[in-house]
Image (cartoon, rainbow, N blue to C red; front, side, top):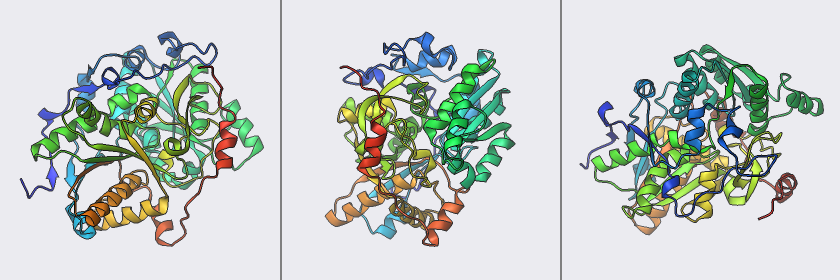
Length: 454
């Protein structure tokens, strides 16, 4: 058992159910609220956005939900994904720690996002929906949904954050190859987008703005629904195939994590890896430290407030109790576009508020330094988002070197960086900069967050 590096599962060992953490939480999460009445949102309130099956999953109290056979068939294009031990990185760091990473870059879209894109497209197709709209930051989610829609014959229209649209043209090409129609956001397509461009023709955009545009198109469109790549309960639940597989793979080699770190923007990658392990921790079967890692330029958990806020900039979505920097917050255009979201998934926010997980923020220069070390040792070029988890794992491994303590560290490498080479070029040329977020910028955005009575 001591010479393993790559730990695989057979198709027969794939999880056949998604895990819903809600029934296992010591304190129930706060409900989402209707933006008009401020009362708990009902299934009818979501009907214009999502198919019935996904609304039921969003509100479900069931611990496990079966994965449909058609979804399993598509999953098998890349699942089960491999778990690696980063032996060469361990050697470089001269650490007694063991570092494991679950690699989701083997999916067709090159990230973890198809884990939820495929079921979302399938459930919509089953209810006769013909078109899905969505937003995307760095392009991983948009490409995943375009791929998923192609599997089930759906149209796909995508609003990509303008800063990423301009910086990552090949992501747009990937979406278009799979049949997606892509707009920079803010766009001239929607009234909200036009209003923002009138104020600033070079507006960098944000995920909140892109969500507003996609949602507005959905509610005015015909036979159209909206798909979200992170944040919501059902999205995080679909991603738990990552953690469920990792549990089985570690058990094969007799390992249990002491520390679990995951990059955290909207929360789907982190929740997908961490929630099955948190289940085991709550049951007393293991006791890992579970740590969210976010960018210092968008430190939602570490510097945001746990408040009810809109999920989008225009205020079209239900209010969610989450850690937020304010729905009008526009993050600096850092390279980890998928982590540039003003809020955090309500479930991740809730478990953080309950003290069940920790959170840290790391600047992008440290993240890319760790990513280059990782790529030169392990051979995989990480996407900018998981560089944050790599940097956190390196910190933990070096702490083990100092203390002489051997720990087992687990993370998810949630995507490859083959379409992010411009980011690495900037880093290698010494042109990348860290962004320090001022208290004034946070206060300005938080001033627009609704104030609700307790």
